[in-house]
Image: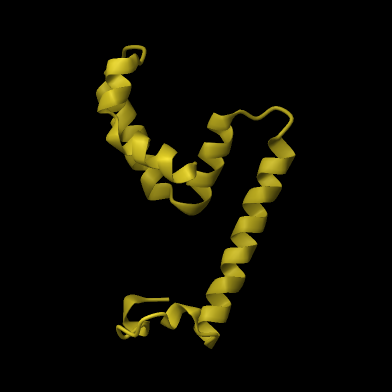
Amino acid sequence: MGATSTLGVPFLRYVPTKANRNAWKLSKEIHSMILDIVKDRRGSSTAKDILRVILEASHPEWQARARSEVKQVRDGHLPDLDMLAKMKVIKMVVLEVL
């Protein structure tokens, strides 16, 4: 659903138009796929794996931004608390996931 399809009408995304029904269906399929992946990996997964799956599935551009930020701040060293405080994108991602 593009920006031109809303025409500035409030709450149009909640109206059951053909485009909205299609978007809702795709959203449900994506969420179902993510849950299936998480359930399949639950026995050996960690919070990092779950976060990675969510980022890859729904927002690959944020995953790239987060990875780039970690590489830049870390600069080849092991992360410490001072480095974590500088990672604004990572903080945003973690807060959004929680």
